[in-house]
Length: 78
Image (cartoon, rainbow, N blue to C red; front, side, top):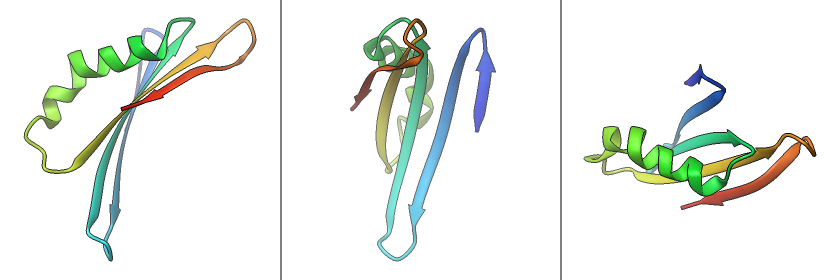
């Protein structure tokens, strides 16, 4: 699922491996000229509550794009 609103993108990715019973949730937030920590904080404030009672392993990933250099500037995963 991808949402685009006011210059940000949130991607929700659910990965299921049937044979290993390995179920994970990845919440990924992209920012431009900010910080990966800001992206992680936004996930915590706006989206993480939806998965509060989940028994699945949840990963939060913040990615910052450096617009001047046109590259990924910082990535943080918790």
